[in-house]
Amino acid sequence: MVSIVYVSNAGSSKRYAEMLAEKTGYPCYAYADSNDAVGTEVIFISWVMAGAVQGISEARVKFGTLKAVVAVGMMKSESQDAAIKEKNDISEAFFSLAGAFDMKKLSGMYKMMMGMMVKMIKAKLKESDDPKAKEVVEKFEEGFDMVSEENLSEILGFLGK
Ligand SMILES: Cc1cc2nc3c(=O)[nH]c(=O)nc-3n(C[C@H](O)[C@H](O)[C@H](O)COP(=O)(O)O)c2cc1C
Image (cartoon, rainbow, N blue to C red; front, side, top):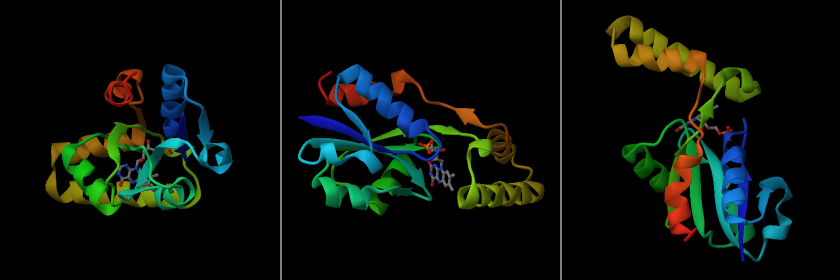
């Protein structure tokens, strides 16, 4: 039996987990409420913070070897995927998905961290006039949502669904 377990801060990993559950028929649990997933093959979906897949170590302890790890981040890029795999010791099947970002949905430390990051990029922008940096700042300030069902096709293929 296969289960989906997710960790989500602002909701995009949860949305992907629920979409995948709907498409596969697998049960879906928030990590905090996932005792019923113990003893099943777990697809672990979680968000990326500073390169770290949140809760992955705890999930490995709780569920043993994971069937797959799905990292939800700012974007999907090959170089970031390689860095995430290395940082999180991922030898499981690995997928990355572009998530969503909205400063208004963040609070506490996360809001502070991202506020600092935007400030840093803005300061750099002043020096360099790099149009790409400007784009990035605008993206952060306005927020973005890249969660979509189509992004699940690779995972569905892996699951034979
Ligand atoms: C403090 C903080 C750090 C982040 N660090 C990264 C990162 O290193 N790489 C990345 O791709 N996304 C990073 N993100 C973006 C989140 O992973 C992205 O917004 C994700 O969709 C959040 O998932 P959630 O909605 O399930 O919480 C960061 C977001 C926050 C708030």
